[in-house]
Length: 143
Image 1 (cartoon, rainbow, N blue to C red):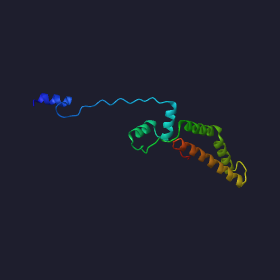
Image 2: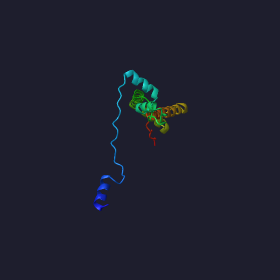
Image 3: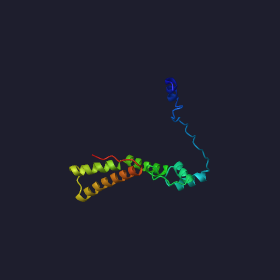
Image 4: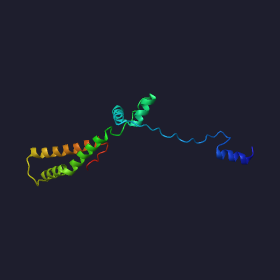
């Protein structure tokens, strides 16, 4: 085979058995009624709807991986609003200031009240951490 033909064949992928790149298949589109779509979302139990439908259609098992939080958008929105309200209320900051004043002696309180203040600060921090985890976010650690 002449060098020029060999070069051309290799460059174009012809003749040497090299596979040509295939065009990807176009996506398949399906219209659903609102009721059908709601039913499929319910059956999917947090899995992406397309993944669930493909597994159901082809009879294959649903992959183990689901959404990061597994929560519906409405639930995530409600949790985010609760977290925002907790931050906006300044309850944690005010409790922390009271506990700090009690620890430094600037505020005289009994040992029981001091313990209650510190417990309240810990509980508010725990609530915040739980809300962040429910949203799929990693809570940062306080110094």
